[in-house]
Length: 324
Image (cartoon, rainbow, N blue to C red; front, side, top):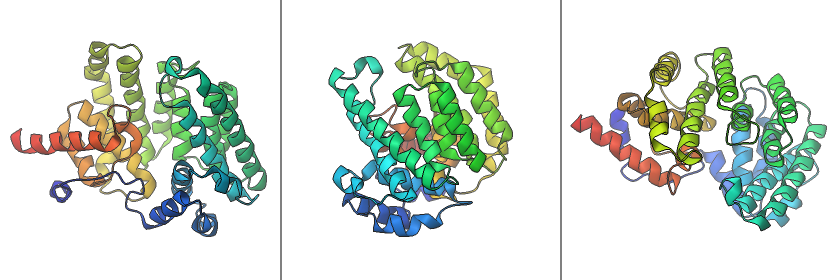
């Protein structure tokens, strides 16, 4: 399988992960058009909620013409797209920096746009109470508006009641419990991650949430504590190494390929985590599965651009294969 990665001499960032429907949705979103989304996404429901969430988020991220978004119909899907776009619109205003580094003038548009998103997403729920996607996105809205854990927990509970293994809901909920956000702690984050993997079947890519939790701890020590020695000391402790290898062997180690477009994030997360742990053999297994497709998470947290980070790690893994 590793030989397959050698085809990809110069991978480039492709947010569609080579998926034909995603490519069409992206093209239209950039043009302020939503015909394909409105005609095809209604069929992506039971058994396909994760893919639906991926497509909705893709549209929301790249539909930059707010005027065209506001013209979407007052339907469940129209409001869902509008709400997803408003979330990205809000974070565009705030930026990805820590709160103390956000420009003072960015806070008002950030909060106002999140309030718009909440209104649209709650309208989507009103029109389609069986879709977990708006609840999943609302967890991120709640984090930004600092609504507290009780509100976020209620949205998470509603999402998983409809789709117990919903990736977007779990990732957003874990992020809300991170220490870098007000009220979060490492202990609460790890409790949530471990509870999730205990309930998830071995075949579920949701098991990558434990790798995400360790990644967030590493990132906090590195970026918030500004303590690189602490970050790498935590990384090299026996527990994270043993726990994550054991999890990998019973889950991702038995998954032969990326089956769904929504699963690339979990394989990228797994790849990066084991690269950080200096476990190159496992990292190479995941590199072979993702091929040329890198996701924003986790690469954007450590590198200037996701693709540059992916390329650097990819080169290191290929070289170590032949140099030992």
